Image (cartoon, rainbow, N blue to C red):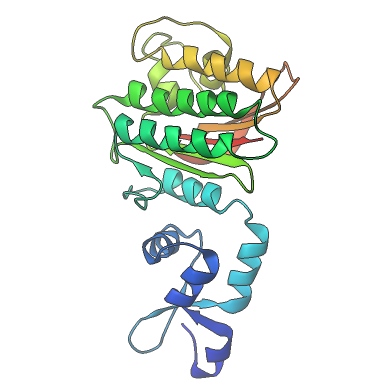
Length: 250
């Protein structure tokens, strides 16, 4: 709660949203999840944000979409993302992937890479839909955003995650780390829903061969991979992702 003497150091929710380039809905969701907490007026209960905190947040958050997707994928209770990044079904996702491909084609320096970037992101998003089908735990669909100036793509879902999927065919799996390694290294089967892992091997091959970087989180595990690397770097992430969170940079 703030005092009247603090007013010059505070921004209204509208001013903060404009500076951050996000909607009021997104800012309220960040407040609720704790990703970017507000302060409240003594009377009226209106949300305000400390100016220096917003400015620090902007400086440290060049990948705004990634931080938004992270907050969404790790929130205890799911809400639909903003419409500009929410693909509620595979048809919407395919349309937006096609739009992204057209933009990539027009981006200088990506003439030889745009199709690889598109197919890599498309495979990850399609796997989310194929894997969860009608079994979404709370919010169906995926978060899909990209910033071609910053050269990154973000995908996230609040689905069942890699471990739950693969335990159907490999019940001996006991950790998210084991499940991620299996998904990216072994061919499991061509039947749904476990074919998701096979698609991730295609993703791995693309990242190893082309100038891409991949961050893939599921449950409490995190995998990172870059061009030319043969070993998968898989660690305990220290945070709980409801389904999957993916960052592709190029």
